[in-house]
Amino acid sequence: MPKILDVVTIPAKSLRQRSQEVEVTQIGTPDFQGFLDDLIATMEVQHNAAGLAAPQVGRNIRVFVVNENTGPKVYINPEIEVMSETVVESEEGCFSVPGVWGMVPRAKKVRLKSLDRHGRRLETAAKGFQAIVFQHEFDHLEGVLFIDKMTHKTQGLGTKSV
Ligand SMILES: [Zn+2]
Image (tube, rainbow, N blue to C red; front, side, top):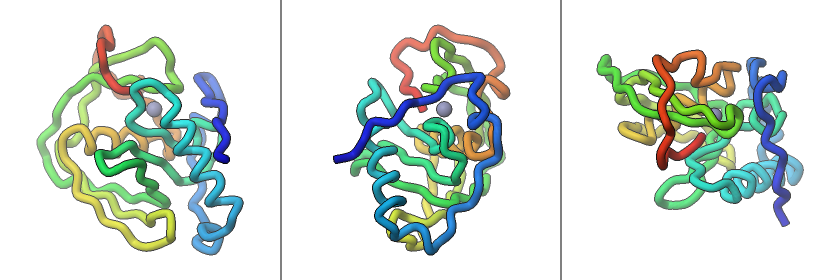
């Protein structure tokens, strides 16, 4: 059974460190696969969750999970490429920054290159909300939080947290 992990909040150190690449040989191990299941379970137990990154549960490794229409999806060692000069501003919230919502400018379209939970190469073109979630989660792996980029605070009515 997957475990529900503790989500850390600011000023936890893990939120401000650059996370380490996952060794490809690690991916297939029961330990690592168990951690992925725990991370997914921890995301799914939160109300209104769109995604969760490993540093948010105190692990500084380059992994995040996203709640997608097709189910939870794992992204390992992601690289992000901006595909559109257009910047859109939308409201964001974060489980690691409780009680704060704000407007954050992000690239409208991105491409994410990563490995999936089986270590296979994965390339995902994203726009709209998915593109925002990718950029927010990727920032977590760099030790960057949305409050670093937000232009102003908002009320956070109904916005999903990531
Ligand atoms: Zn977050």
